[in-house]
Length: 493
Image (cartoon, rainbow, N blue to C red; front, side):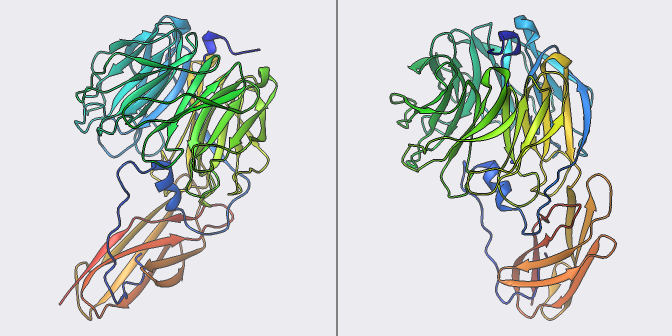
């Protein structure tokens, strides 16, 4: 049975040996680079954990929570949550939970939206450096935009007319002007709607592009590597993904269908097999029976290989991509609406996945998010599930996560002066990490064993300059590999 409107799926990232002989240049990611890709690149090599462990805490939300947006809404360096509340299709809301930086959250503050908000997304629509929110309002046939004040609060919503039953909203720059635009799936109209940004946080009227029957969710990416954003839309009735290639001016070409699975309810874009080409993953509801995650590997020209299915739980309805075991390979978490649990599938790096590991959630988990919420090193993502009928969100903190901190002293130093680099590895939750640290700077590496959570080396730097250094933690049987912050050791004459 197809999920009801009431349960409209809501979903829907060293000190090395300062002995370097040459200064290492600073590298930055290009604007628009995938946040998820950046997080994956920072993962450290090591023995990956195969059995996962999470610490669950539930937080009360508004009625019928649907999806989760993660961002730093009050600019304190700690991640916060925004959760859309469908409220039975009546006037809806967004519950905002400000983060404490340790994986816990302050009590919710609710902000009104249009009727029946399903998916919520965060972006800076007016380029003022403050995150804003947008919802797709299923029963209200609208999208609501709430501009952020930068202190964790939001202004009253402004609504824009959408099509019939807009389920999903996604954000990307479709016309290349540097401002985030919107795309919504209009399930009752069998099309997607594009709202171009006026460069001030307001939006132009919707322009529509046809899809197959029942467009349900949408994800964006550059599927043919032409520098223009494209669309992937799950068409529920057809069991397919409709791909619309972008023209770079805010318009799109006709759709091409790819078989995805039975009743695809959600889609995400990620480089699942790490070949530099965006792939697609769908959560296939399968009439509430044992469902699948469908993987369509990208070819790089805007087309996709035939779907490969990985078994999930009962009624997959939302999903997210993360790295849960620190091996640098994308993993999946799937919300099993009918099973009242979530399936975590560890990736093999070639587009296939290991057998699912299931964890209980609240009743009717429908939306998923995967991010590091506990101040941990990359590669140990946490999970948030929106539980439709439980009026709650379940936060699952990764028990294998660590916090890795690198320092050096003295810094700055003088040429020929000994410098000590020290790394501290602490459990994000409980326990004592063991293992090995690799201090790295450019091609220079030096190893040291952890003792009571610390490791250090002392080196003499005989060359002047600014040297980028970091520390890589090997992981152990209980903790994931990880990478420290990067520091700059300045050596003066």
